[in-house]
Length: 142
Figure (cartoon, rainbow, N blue to C red):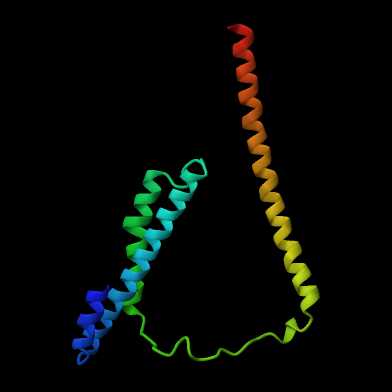
């Protein structure tokens, strides 16, 4: 990525070449970030003794098909250097009362989190009960 940036600085005359160089640097940054996020996710799941988040086919699909196709989208987007310097207009006239909106938001989030935890607990309890009964049956028969 650094090599591409240094090459792009020397050839600013042609617009097509500068767009391609910009794509290469943005695309490379996107692909590196995607690969790093996938790697961290897999390392974290193995450190916490969880089953792998993705199967091998899913990892290959994301790394070899999805990420390069998404990185190609940077090629056809015009670059705007001052994108992050301009302040966007806010459509927050309907958000004047912060307390009711924040309580509604926290309620919606807590309901979804609690439902996920409930499903996870049910699945975990089912697995633990089946393991307990299988061990109990082995003790009784063996």
